[in-house]
Length: 200
Image 1 (cartoon, rainbow, N blue to C red):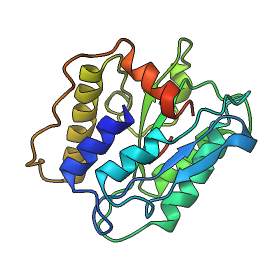
Image 2: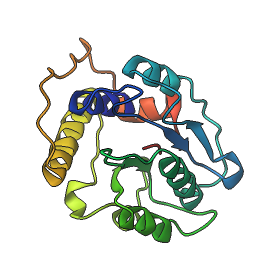
Image 3: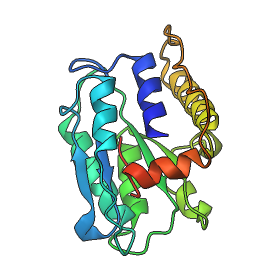
Image 4: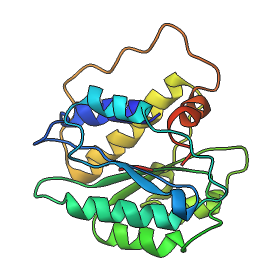
């Protein structure tokens, strides 16, 4: 899922040191919540994807969504710049059970102009909690995917909505070519490989 987001971000405005930039924060328990890479760490899509592949599953005992959002807020604040529209994509089951309340942090981010999307993950999703985090209108900011094709479709929907909301031009590049086969449970397998925990 996150690699598809990387592709679509690159289509809207190419990823580079002076263009679009991507960072990642992973969150589980407070002690294991960390910035995986900052906006200045990777200056092209391939480097971002390599960094995503390098994220290790830490199997934390709890979910500190609020702590993760605080770290994301810090990362976003350090990278603010004219002409950039900050976007945050949260991958979560919505079941915060450790650390601070994530809702006030999400509200502060939105008040500062950050557009927040989310993709629910896991078998027991607390949708109401996720809805409290994302930007309005809520249906346009929550997306699910169970396959590579679905991941592409929801990323396309999300960024179409995002472009329209911010008056951005349509992309001119062709969409990425999907692999010849779609592995089962693509979305969940991808999460097991690199996150288990958001990034921008």
